[in-house]
Length: 63
Image (cartoon, rainbow, N blue to C red; front, side):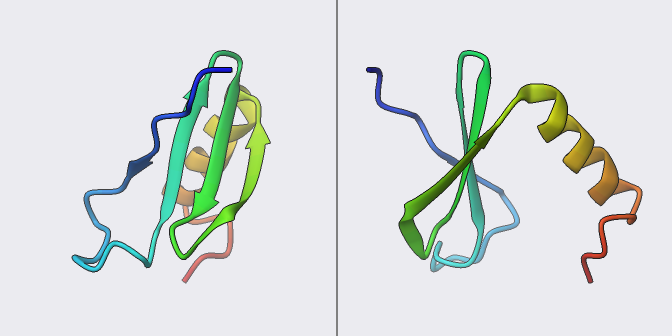
């Protein structure tokens, strides 16, 4: 299995431990919090795109 290459947002703090990281693995997208690297969730690209669209439209309830 190929090791995932994780990416952090450019908006993440300098300490680097207060953000969500993402990685792509073919037909799956993996997400994890930078302060707990052992907990990872995966989803498909269309569901991940739906999440991003909801965040951009401010309908996900993030404040």
